[in-house]
Image (cartoon, rainbow, N blue to C red; front, top):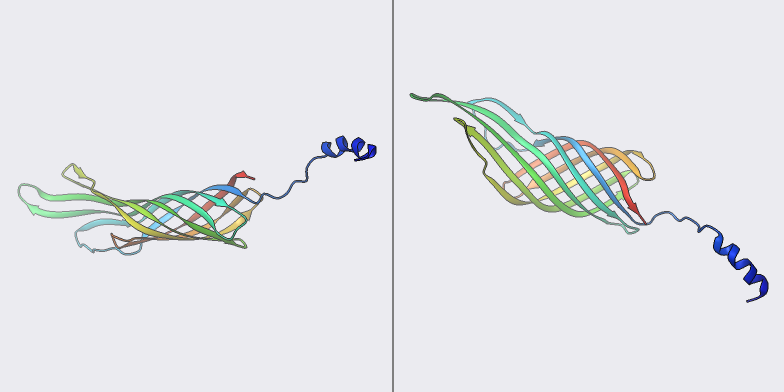
Length: 195
């Protein structure tokens, strides 16, 4: 090493390092929309009202790497069905009214991949399915934990370096309950960490 090289060494070390685009990121996001149960199992003439679906939401975390697939985890809440029934049972009760609802929480994990402004995800995991029924002031809430699948497709309408806003469609299948569901809404994602 010459004297000139030694004299230039502090200058070279003082130069800022060239910033390279982040190749890895931990992305977090949220989904908000409306969900529907695709198959209503029973029809009942004594129903005074019914509602298929309701406001749904979910949150996710995704590890984005330089490779093709990105693993994700997703937790969501999806109302499936609600109704009220009226039945004439005679004396001494007369007409009985019952209010019923069915919701599910989903816990999914799987791979995702991006193509242009689109993201596709496929996951498997568990659905916590709960039914709530109230008759004569008494409420019962049976529940079960079922296996299931989720498929989602998102399209980014706004995409900046660390923030993405778009639309998302989801299809889920609760296997043991033989219950498919569909959800449509908006999605918002951003990079919490990049390196």
